[in-house]
Image (cartoon, rainbow, N blue to C red; front, top):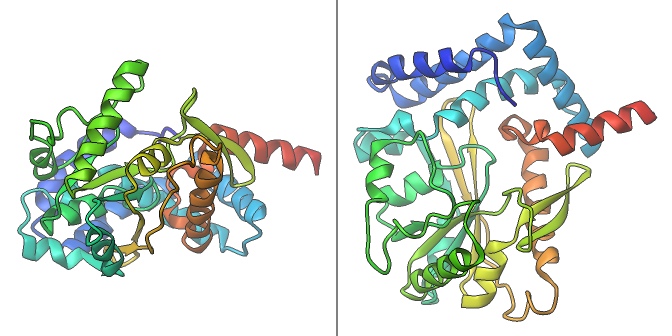
Length: 314
């Protein structure tokens, strides 16, 4: 969903972020959210869009949310989400630690101890790049396997400046890549895992083509990339889901879930869709519990269209 005044907000954030970094970081994060909440209060059309989307989602999921509160907080969190990790640029490890709380880190460490590397299965819920930022700060050996993220901190960009067989540069993927490029990239990712490193990949990427699988999400069918399933089946690497909640006080709560293993024959036996659906169910549970962290899920065209049709039918 495109926000009114998006270019102005980018300019505003670019101007004020250096100043905000001088504040206690949780306070600075709340100020960023306040920009989105101010937009929400000032623009009736924008406000009605949020209210309608949240109300439809609450009906789809059977959740008794306070629609007005969730809508306002979602508007603020969307700005925090779009800011990615820029607020932490140039910040010391000690100061950065003040915005993170981490639950069940042992799930990740236990997975790594198996000696096969690990797939950190992320998504666009909450502060989606903040777990990676935290992992870099904690000196975990991490590589991204996705499109190169934009508008990120210089700190994170420096972590990407690695080359060679296990480097980051050739691991970024493109939607315009052909089959040969896709095959080469997954083999490079497999080598990274076999070396004992982490691969950070999103499990909620909408995708069309031979490497996509259907899943039910928010009451509608979406087609999603199953690359993470292919990679897990190929390598035997454990998969550790991670979620990052943007909290009201301006902090980020990172939660690692228990590892699981995708069988080696999952792709050949036609089980990829089951694994994709299993993950999307886990993500939907997060949305149920923390709807203000849903970012753009309620505004996905297929989800919004399905909800509108159900409303007409009723």
